[in-house]
Length: 258
Image (tube, rainbow, N blue to C red; front, side, top):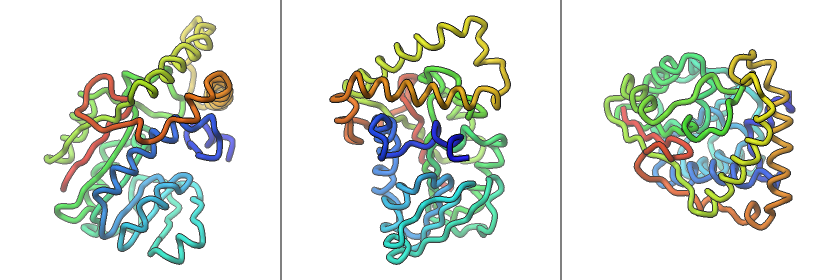
């Protein structure tokens, strides 16, 4: 099962992952400016969000369908509860009990996105906030067989508005250094997909593509790292920023209030 997680779970332990890892980290750094009280993270993944946000909360609930590594130091110093569960629904979480819901790079994996957002709204207190990220479909370089769907900016705004009447739809952007890497990655991916003469990535079953995608993704990132070591190694979360949403954002960054 570990192999099947690698394409979607970035780790700071692999140098080739640094650019995408820092892209995820900017969302946590922005969330850290806001969170307090009882925080629920849906999709706690490798656990780096817990390290960033749990110390800022009174109570931290982490949910993931796989085990999440939580260090003993973090466990001992923070009120953390881990729930191993697929979502939706949000099991074992009461109505109107959460101050902040954090869910980064998750909704694209959820079959019933409306139920997912409805469950988040259910557990939020009045005035509580959802902070969500998901890839901008317009900037994806190829189809990910791990994703049920992706959203362009208009689709994202429409989806959120169906559940939350008060929302701010922004985007995650990169500076010149990040976009230089993005362009190099785009060119590298194009060299791979040019062999897909029949556009099989768009019509073959997802399960059939997942392992090849995972392997090629890993090979591609490591090749980019080897050929652009200085660039890949020196990108930090400070090379990303949050601004008003448009078609060029890398990810959607949503703050919605109940």
